[in-house]
Amino acid sequence: MIPPVLPTYARAKVAFERGEGVRVYTAEGEEYLDFGAGVAVTSCGHAHPHLVEALTEQARKIWHTSNLYQMPGQEKLARRLTEATFADTVFFTNSGAEALECAIKMARKYHAANGHPEKFRLITFEGAFHGRTLATIAAGGQAKYLEGFGPKVDGFDQVAFGDIDVVKAAITPETAGILIEPVQGEGGVRPASGEFLRQLRALCDDKGLLLVFDEVQCGIGRTGKLFAHEWAGITPDIMAIAKGIGGGFPLGACLATEAAAQGMTAGTHGSTFGGNPLATAVGNAVLDVVLAPGFLDGVKQRALTLKQKLAQLKDAHPAIIEDIRGSGLMMGIKCKVPNTELQAAAMDEHLLTIGAGDNVVRLLPPLVVTDAEIGEAVNRLDRACRALEAKTR
Image (cartoon, rainbow, N blue to C red; front, top):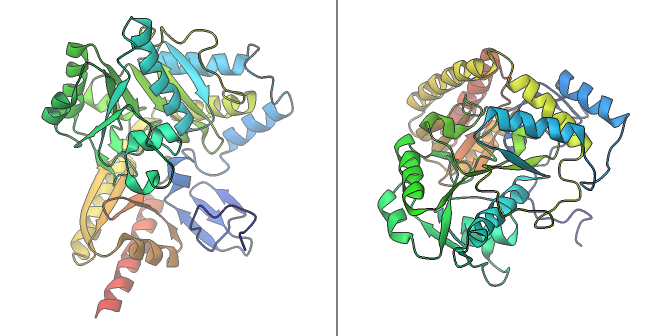
């Protein structure tokens, strides 16, 4: 018999009643260190007092009016995002997939508005993940997500990650732009090199294409800068964000330059709930935390601590760990054993992690994690590795 909740997730047999900072607790009081952050969502930790206050205050005022009316909180968040980034304008959504849908439509509409409706194809990359809608699974191109859902949505040409020559070879008269995650998350925590991102920017400029970044997972301070592409010293034309910007509340956004957004006039796109007062109240509170003086410097420092401790862990367990990779507080452990085994062993030690492609275990702690909590998490990983080693003896 099918359960009341559609079984599209293989859920762990544990439920959490409350959270505080980097820790979550079951109804029985069992404590877990959360180094998954709800898949990079709880950027400010669980039940951050400032976020709770912002949500509670807004909940007492008004929840929903629709985008038929002006919303001061939405306008404030849009203004702050444009002031902090390359963008001139923002469309708010409820999720990353919706933000990507907007980005895809915008890239196509740009060329249509400039007299080239034939330019609708986007070059994407192997290992990519852009969401679960029909368009975004087509953009990601992974067979396991496409199987059984009918014809693949046309308009996406997938090439090898990190190879500028194959990107150049994939350009046709129908190419509208290039869509890439500066750091692949689901694909195995694979950062694109700064050189590759700069090459993509130059190529787009040369060919009249739009550069579209998916920073749903790697954005909002995750790598130690507000957005991961900043490390490369370049900017996109369009960018999709979500996850960390809501701090646990459903919120996403599509950011764009004025030029890239020129085709998106009244009536071309919409969202019933996108940018609602509750979501944007929390989004503004998240920016209060992340943009506070010294916060991102602290993320960089703690990221270095995590990287160093993971390198020591790798050296201590060569039979379990093949490599450590990632950027900032978005780290991956490439395993020699099945990654599900390390995940399960970590869960036994009350450490929450997230699986990824290429046999990787992701570590995505809240950005407010402390050095002490990083040390505690790596100690739990060490015990997990020892438990796996004991099974093979």
